[in-house]
Structure formats: C-alpha cells, structure tokens
Image (cartoon, one colour):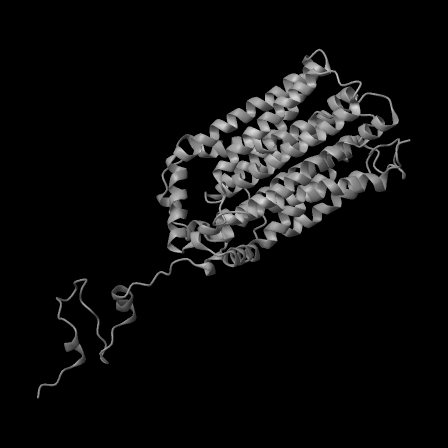
Length: 478
C-alpha cells in the first residue's frame, strides 16, 4: 500500500509561484499562507457598529473615498444657506429690540411699560418653547426614523408668510393698540419658530448622513446669520430716516433670505454628491429592514442611538443653555458705563454683532482644530457655566437691580462677551459634529435629529432660565 504524506494532500506548484503553499511537516499550512488563502471575513454593520470612534472616521468610512466630488462645494454652501435661514427669524426678532421697545411699545402706560421692560424675555419664551416642542415632534414622529425633506419646504413657506405679515404690521400705526400689537407679535413669533423647529431639525437630519463638515456648515450658517442680521440692523439704523422705514427694509431682507433658502432646497437633491450618500444610506436601510420597524423596535433604536451619543447630546444642550440664559435677555440689557459710543449703537455692536461674529469665528475654528475629543468635550462645556454669574455682575439693568454692580469696567465686559460668543460657536460645532459620527451611517440621520433636539432644548431652557435670572436680579417695574 502506498503511504500518503501530508504534502500529497496539496497540489504541486512550481517553486516561487504565488500558488505554491508552504506545508509544514505536520501537514498544516503556515500562518502567512492561511491569510493569503483565507481572506478575513468582513461583517456587515449592525447595532454593534453604533459604537464608533470619531478619531477613526477616515479609516472606518471608505465610502468618502468613493464619493463623487462636491463640485464647487455646492452642497456645503447649500447647508450654509440653510443654516442662515434656520436662525434668521430668531436673529431678526432679537436684533429689532429698539424697533419693538422704543417705537411700537412707546406708549407710556403701566401695562405697556411692563411689557416693554420684559420684551426680550417674552420674545425668547414665545419663540423657543414652540421651537422646542416642534423640534421634538419632528425628531421622534418619523417614518423609519429619518428626516422628511418635504417638511423643510413647508416650513420655509410658513416662515415667509409670517414675515410678510410682520412687514404689514410695521407699516401700520399701532400707537393706540400697543398691547394688542404685543400679543399679535408674540403669536406670530410662536408660529414662526414652530416652523423653524421643524426646519432646523430636518436639516440637521439630512446633513448627518454627509461628512462632518456639512453638519458644521449648518452651525456655521447659524452664526453667520447672526452676523449678517446684526450688520443689516446697523445699516438700517444709520441710513433709514425713521424706525418704520428701518423695520420695513429690515424684515423684507428676511423674506429675500428665505426665498434663497427655498431655492437651495430644490437644488440639493439633484447634486451627485448628495445623491451618493442618500442612496448609500437607503441601501443599508433596505439591507437591515429598517423601513419595517415596529413602534417598539423604533423606540429601541432611538434609545440605542442615544446611549452612544448622550455625552455629546447633553453637552450641546448645556452649551446653548448657558448661551441663551445670557444672550440676549441679560446681555442686551447691560448698559455702558463710560465707553466712548452712542447708546443706540452699544447693544447692536457689543451684544448682537459681537456675539454672532465671535460665535461664527468659533465655528470656523472647529473646521481646523478639534480639541478636546469626543470623550472630554464636556469638561470645558461645564466650565462655561461660570459665565452666567459673570454677566449678572456686570452693569445689567442698573436702575432696577437689587444688588450692586461688581464689574464696573466696560472692557472686561466686552472681553467676557468675546469669550461667550467664541466658546458657544466652537463647542456647539464640536458636539454637533461628533454626535452623528459615533454611530453607523444608517443611524446618522436619527443621531443628527436627536442632537438637534437637544440643541433646541438648550435654547428653550436657557431662554426660560434667563427670565428667572432677571426676576432674581431686579425688582418689579412700578
């Protein structure tokens, strides 16, 4: 009988060819040849892939290497335009403080005086509470947990109609019905920001499937919107002959911006860059049967995503909580002491323009520097809480406050404003970029909407807390 050796189990190949196998004396392949003969098995991403490290994005996501180019950065600028459009209504309302308080609410009665004194707090609550509610509804009432692009177009149309109504109100003489004007303005602000909540949340959900910088483009646009509106406000103050004309030009600008954002909405789906990522996510969802989830499965998916991004979600909430507790309710009511500038330009420059300009620079910096990483970003975010007592110690409502002004130097106050604005823009960008990239791409849209929900939650709770700060710091107006 012929004896079969270990080497006889394998086909003979000429020495030195790539198909030659190195057989050990015990009849087994060497480790190197096993790797060549048996390539590693690649597992499809499942819920386990939710736990991703954003420091490894380039290695983990080869899809970006195969994506078509964003020609002329069109998609980036579309997201930037939407970012401008999202916060433009809010910036329009708060920058028009002088128009509302000194022109439309100029009637000298006790009721109107109280409304005028608390106008910034009232407009903040009327704007941000409905914004928060609709953002939550839009985030969690979804088909398949994804953003509905159609809601963006509907929201922009509603916002445009509200601003047309605001222009009409600016044309009317409301001096004999100031109280009614105040409540009409609050109702319009509520409806306007309900639409804004849907617009904001849906846009972040769309951007979340794209690379990180496209989410940051929205945040960048948010603060660029503030800079643009602050400059427009200053131009109107300087050039328009009266407050009525200022307001008309000012609010017409908002309508033009919203129409540009409306056009951008229809341009996005036809770009090859966006279609590539949208189709890729659709294939993954189809593979994992995401479109047929039951209610309990959808809730479980939301909970699973939140467990992976909760640090970033809570951090972005606290960033905006601190910012909106101070800006604009407290900050806009800090009076100059001896700075060489006319009073009418003090708040427009060193509150609205200063905050939005340095928040924009903070956003821009996050494009190049991303420190700290996703694990430790909460530490400097928590330290920012010290800015709240700092601003209360400045010259906030000096005629009404119940304790002494402790910071009597305008320059220290200005530096504090720079710090607040820059850190708001920088850390909000980091958190919003980190969050969706901690999960697999098929869950990125859901993560983006959850992050946007916590952003709006921070705005809403911050605005309401600013009212509490005002009540604790000042005595009621007689």
